[in-house]
Length: 214
Image 1 (cartoon, rainbow, N blue to C red):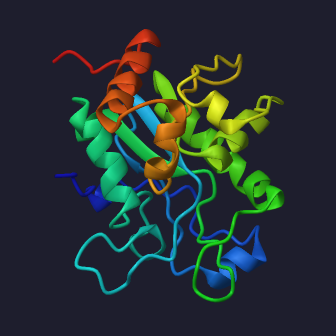
Image 2: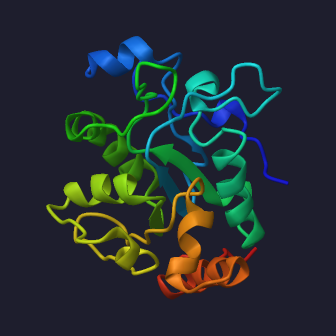
């Protein structure tokens, strides 16, 4: 069972942020990164979802103020890495965009390029503070937001999944599927679920970011 993060490990980088007026107006809370600042891995999502304010605990970052705390994606991605043997203290979770991008009807929309650019300084500040062995973006938008900081891009996201990227200005990057879409795309990559998870562990070990020895 996934470990729910300790709220004291939340890492707010500002008291408030209104760089994106649409996001500031729609959000309940800013979903700051959460986890150990000595983490081995930084896992980067796209943006918090609308969440469920009535959930017992896993209400989502829009309500908890902590990245990857939604009932589906949050628990699933945390289960993945804990299942590979990483301890909660080995992991830091954040998003490329820290606020819920509403479609105006209560659901998510894709963050705009401007919104990703406005939030990127926060993401880069987190990476500088944590200095992980590897950064793991989940999904296309998180991957593109990271690579934009290095003036790089990906032509096709599926072709980039589990293909290590070694930019000069950032730690190694290992793109993986977003947990919300993993079941849809995993077969396209030629994996069964267990094989895919093992492949993630092997790729991280190959980057020197395997499960820390205790």
